[in-house]
Length: 149
Image (cartoon, rainbow, N blue to C red; front, side, top):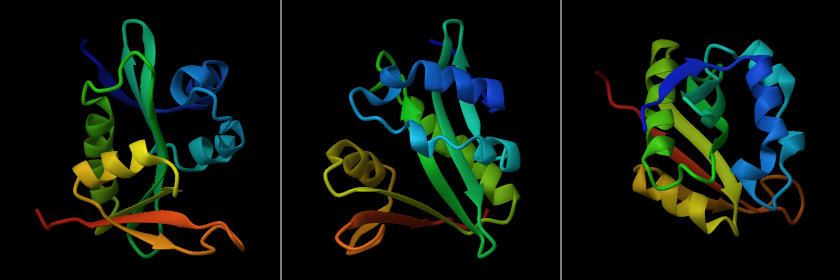
């Protein structure tokens, strides 16, 4: 199951949106897939390609305070449990580090047990932040400091 990690482009984003259910199941997160993220942060948005198409992707960017923020990460339903999510995170970490990132950050809903477990396995610290996404909309915030290399 060889994959190649490439920079994402708008065509990749359109393909992901076409196959949205393969990555997100019943959850409709299409509104979070902003074309501007790929256009403006294409150097930190990644796709994992195999012979059968896009197997996973990560949309992220580096903030002015040197945080590598992961906006979305998803793997296709037939690639879960293969380590592909970890591989995408590792590629993003190196890309973000080259752009000066000293830490990583991501968020998820409080009910997304899979995301919480995944980020904990990757060594992230997590904390619940009330009203993070507006009144009554708590989120789990993940952070991980990057060690100097």
